[in-house]
Image (cartoon, rainbow, N blue to C red):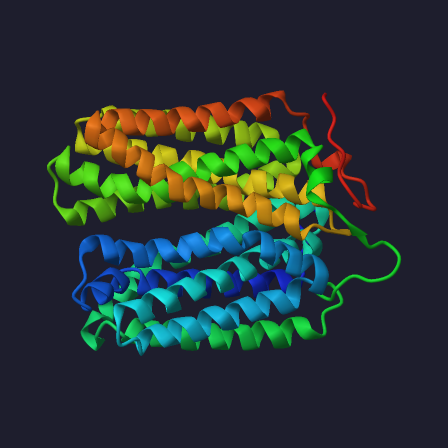
Amino acid sequence: MRTREAALPREIWVLVAASFVIALGFGLVAPALPQFARSFDVGVTAASVVISAFAAMRLIFAPFSGRLVQKLGERPIYITGLLIVAVSTGACAFAETYWQLLVFRGLGGIGSTMFTVSALGLLVRIAPPDARGRVSGLYATSFLLGNIFGPLVGGALTGLGLRAPFLIYAVALLIAAAVVGVMLRSSHLAQPTTGEGLRIMGLREALGSPIYRAALGSNFANGWAVFGVRVAMVPLFVVEALGQGEAFAGIALTAFAVGNAVVLIRAGRWSDRYGRRPFVLAGLMICGVGTIVMGLTESVALFLITSFVAGLGSGLSNPSQQAAVADVVGSKARGGPVLATFQMTADVGTVIGPVVAGLLAQHLSFSTAFAVTGVIMLVAAVPWFLAGRRTPDRIAPADEVIKDTGS
């Protein structure tokens, strides 16, 4: 019990703080980006392509990032990724044509996947084995808070012009890269592991774990529902089905985020104590059912409640599934492609989910779109139900690799 509540390594807090800055800046430019793209006299579709380019490049270059992490180590790839996003974001502020903006934003996606994969690798290696859930919860909470406050700050900066948020974000990323570089440079925990104890985990080995396979499915469902459909469909549903103003869409999204924030850190701690699987299962089922009900409601109050409940479910499952993947890799192994594939599944869901849900809403109904999304979450729970249970008291001190059982 005392070990579980022990102070976390300094390096963890450095990564958590950097995550907050990254998410804050991402939320900072999000409100300005579509309008900035439209300022080049392009249509709504072309403006949307600029947003999609970032996600597409993340997806395309994720395997390459995993191989780089495997070969060069997490810290240099993390810092390089931050610098690429900083430079490309700053370049966006000076874009003079739509095509320049599109290219610069796409380059940012490459840097984004580099620091995302390497950050996960660092967290896997640095976090104490019996505190991985707690660390995952902290990291997710910092990212969530950045996403909440970023758009608020971005909205307040609109008076400075559409280019200002990009410059501010670029400077913030440069500072974050410098701080991370200095703070982790002398860290023995963050240095590439060499010599005895180093093992390389390939994707094929990880796929032999039922826990890892279950995590791929649930992360895909999470990307589809939480990062894709929720962001794309909730604003439309609120305006077109519930007859509310656009401002209310932000309130509905905030309700989900609040539900997330309520349990993220707690869920991580609980999963360290009681195991990963119960909370992933509960979270997927709660989020799935909540998403289905969201599409059926005609009441504004009920919609907010179900959004909050779905957020609770997402907050229960996400830290636990990430900690489960960390258990599979272990702190004495480097698994760049393993972590990159885990990230890719969420990105694939994020890209595909809104498209499928949009087609369903347009040709059938909003309720059908939300129902299909909820069912995908419920189906993703099945492999977790069938997979072996992993509890912290079964984590070996050496922690070279976690083997799953069918118990």
